[in-house]
Every structure is written in structure tokens, then in C-alpha cells.
Image (cartoon, rainbow, N blue to C red; front, side, top):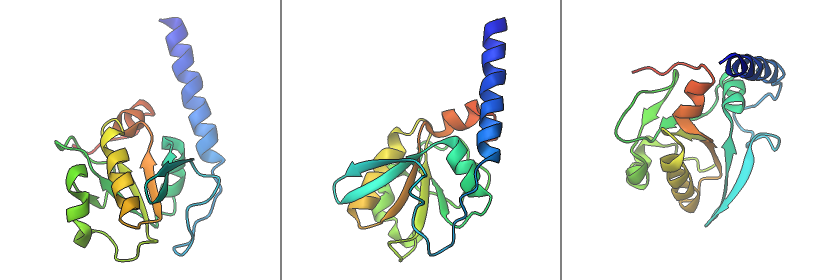
Length: 148
């Protein structure tokens, strides 16, 4: 019990330090900063898996669309712009920017559905897609709120 408490405190401290050190400024016309996340190759191009720390840093100067693709609905992160079911993302392009270079961040409960949606958007020609690695579970584990 004591070891777990210490581990959780260390994780929280590390998250705080990493978030405080996040200094990448993003302009609306910029593409995904190369230092953010891990590139995932899929048919038609790639998207980036980003961490909770990355997403929190990007939220400071939010210039992207944040989309919850989880079904059934289990809540949203603060500042979520839309909820679009992962398996209908291609049929809901009217809810997405016409600009295929627009920055879009996706999340779901665990990241399984959002990886499917990310791959679909890349296949459709979108070039600045971010997927939250670990999804809502990682978000909550980091102590971040969910709006139910």
C-alpha cells in the first residue's frame, strides 16, 4: 500500500514536471510538431499517438478539433468539440474541417476505437491527426476530469 502511494506520488510529480516543461508553441497553420508523439504508419499516410502530457500541453493554446469517438457515450474531456462514433467518422465529414491539413485530436475509452478512426481519417486524406494513447482511461489515471 505504501509503495503504491509513493509510486502514484512520483508519477504525479513527473507528470507535473513534464507538463510544466511543455513549451512547443503551435500556430494554426503549423503541422504537428515533430517532437510530439509517436508516428503510426497506416494506409494512406500516418497519424501520431500522443500522451496525456502531450495533449495537456497542446490544450494550453488549443488550435485543433478535439473529438470523442467512443461508443457508447461515457463522457467528454473539457473542451471537446464533437462526439462522432468511430465507426461512422467517414460518413460525418460535414462535422470535420474541409481543410485536410487541419489538426484533429481523437480519443475514446481505451484508444482502440480512436486508432480505427485515426486510420480512417488518414485514408480519407487528413494529414494532422493525433490519437490519445491510452484514451480516457489514461486521462483519468493522470487525474484529469471527465464531464459525464
